[in-house]
Image (cartoon, rainbow, N blue to C red):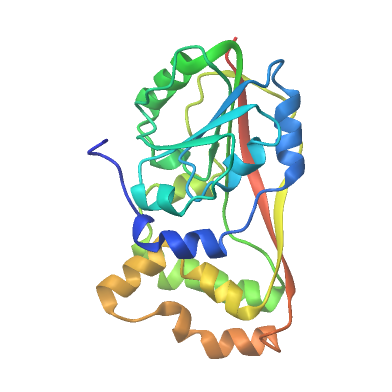
Length: 251
């Protein structure tokens, strides 16, 4: 096990699985067009397995790893997915055996130099790596203003420093692969009630840390304002997260 693993999610694994949105199916269809072979994919830092399950529709076998035992225990089971507890930087995956490596919303936690060495070891010569991230969701002006204040003001000192890399859409990260350009625009979308959105907010690592340090739930602190901005809590509203992506070829 990687002793440097920064575990911000194990304690909230079941809620993470319940409330986190899913990436769009067209994203995986696009990624499948980039690789000539579809024998094996590696979904690194798989979390609850949402990306692995979608990859399994396009690849004969998916290896899904995560450094968190709790996340792997909560992951969605699938016939052609092999889940295992493993740090991103060192796996037991066979060399040159992978057609596609994916990292969804996790690259900013890795030791990048060691991880990229591992990617180059496991990718076959025509393999592809695709990484993506997302920042704040958008609903409407009134709700967005409250969420922005929660994120940037209330929680400002509770986010880990790696969060800045997410805010920049991974543009500042080294990426030693031949870049794919242009990359289509993709976004996640969902339809949520107010209680579901509040459940999602409580999966934020900064919210968990705020509660741990202050014994106060910052989401509950703005519950009245959120309800005023939302209206009927049972009313579903459209939620959108634009994705930032980097894709590279191993040749």
